[in-house]
Length: 383
Ligand SMILES: [Fe+2]
Image (cartoon, rainbow, N blue to C red; front, top):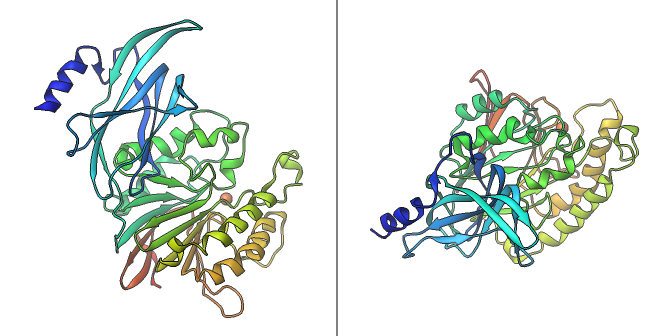
């Protein structure tokens, strides 16, 4: 009954959905960084707005409003929004909707608002801390082909998965603000991302183009970095940003890349992280990194620089951390490296650019199944 009253009051000032040729939501909503107690909701509008998210829980009497606030200012007079929702309870369902007010004119001492709109209600679940089983769908090297992404997702059990991981090179280069939406975000929103998150692991192609330095406005990150650990009960998923493939000094980068430094920063971070109580309590340890930490060909090219650097930096840390499995992309060819005593004590699976990998973790261990776009299973193994 309370919901009906709230709806009536808001509908007196807001139009649900879009106004004809007026203010509308142009991308999203899509969920990022969903954990046991938080979530971030991304969306855009076609005009500059003041926007927020309303959240409903069965435990609350009225919906709560959340704003994207930074140092005392609500982020406004912009098209893109990322609203962080904090202090949620584990294992609960939350309903949410978007609300936007157009800012017609923004003067130093007078803000003039135009139309207001509200979206329909969507929902998501926070994670349960003690979850024993989890499953993920992994796709990589899509290179702007949203229809291929759709085909691969539809071949998988993405509807049942806890999250979808995009393992890099979802786009080819970034010099148009619409590229991430057209390449993979819009189709994700359409299929699942209003209700469950995708986690975009950055590949080398996402670092290319004159807008690459704005990529963080499109996807959620852990503590402001493109790497981090995602915990699902007793499973840890380590996400690394492997950077560009060629040396930073290669002429195509024009002297403005520092990926050797970024990879070292991640090695130092991971070394500390694996000593944490949280990590030591995990049973299953999986690494997702776009460029593999193992050579897959005998011919040395400038593109092998990152592989060599990653192998040197991370092999000892992964061995020490007792990593169960490393999953990569980048080469566009399926490849499997068995674990070896004396070097990589962890297996490496490379998913190609036209297959979908399904990872499931339960008390029997970690299982990975890879299905090609034609529906054939090309890899199926229990670790
Ligand atoms: Fe790549």
